[in-house]
Image (tube, rainbow, N blue to C red; front, top):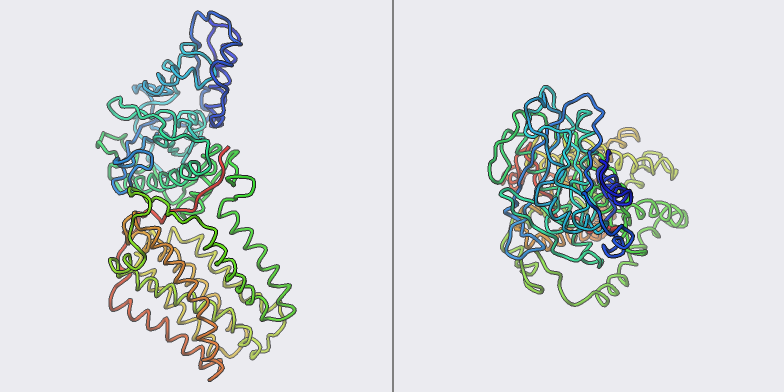
Length: 570
């Protein structure tokens, strides 16, 4: 960054701190000292505002840029009553040529004016930094280089910060062949300028933990909505709310099969949480964002991952004493559930667009959206079969001559590996196949798995059973999660998701109660054959009713259910 002469050294250094940190996508997250404390260190008179230039990109591509005004008609703004959620995003891309196109300002006029009036975010006094004169080395609305589709990278800034703070990193990545989409989180960042010069300012305070949780949840919804609108752009549409003309070839330059995300501080947390909850994001970078709200309150995904590591170790230890003991751990859920019911606050959280304490009960959700019953039934079925396989597979392997704990564990590891493989390939599967096909594929794989468990003559063939079942589970759970979340209005999505968990856990607890006595009264072979009939009947019902046919079309990803709250912002 170059700072022009004509002002005091102290003012130049202060400006360098603001601009230098911000333009490399590493802005401090809103913890600046008050303007008065900084101003006391400055000379009494500063005759000319600091002007600066951004570093030039080092890649071989010319860089073009445009803005999109995106409006989510299905989501109320969480910070402003009675308004739809709207965003401004910048799209930075390799351009065919920058010649003849105007340079893009570093900040829109309204945002630059706010930056100056705020005393450069509290680091100087008004009038000491000329934000409005700074220009980027990019060509506004230049035609995109669409000779090849390019990876897409999303950027989310720190809590309260403008997307402008990530400009230099975005331009550098675009010069190296990426399409970069920078997002302003409206009413949370300091100022956002919309078409026509309208400027929206920050609404909520950001100091308390509940508000920060809400901010992260809103940000993740924002990112997922942006991905939805980019899919429209990639399919040849114009997602801009005002249908403003877009740069030629921009949609064809997007490769939405290769999506990454990065962010700083709260933006880094947003990147981690968005990647966890949306399979369209393949990779992410969290720059300085802690994955916890407080010293003891962790991001849900972090806690879940820790449990996924600790539980197999604990189960292996107690399972060496008796195979009954790992299942006995479930009994801990009884006192924990009672304690949770007693300790949780009595009030209900506010849903989008409704006052606290209002909203339909669970049974009302089922009555109004009866298709959910079929999907919950499938989740119950999948969970019941999963635990039947896990509990009774060792007995079947013993019949085939496999009794040592390590070889037995490899069979269940194979199932988990198959589920992971589907996770890696799910985005490509979803782009090519409708939800109805994917949903019917899961019970078909379950049926094949249990038929193998019943009739396979040896251990190698038995190994195929958990593999097939894992493939079915890997397809089933993301599909039903999306269909349940998108099958109801946003206002009752929380209840629908909660009932989904109820169906899953009900299947887990019912499995030993239903399958166990059945096998004990007959045999393993008969029990597995009868268990195979359950998904076979579900498959027949799906085929006849086409109950799983609803859902977004391939190639146009749908928003997913509400993500878990993320971590403490720094």
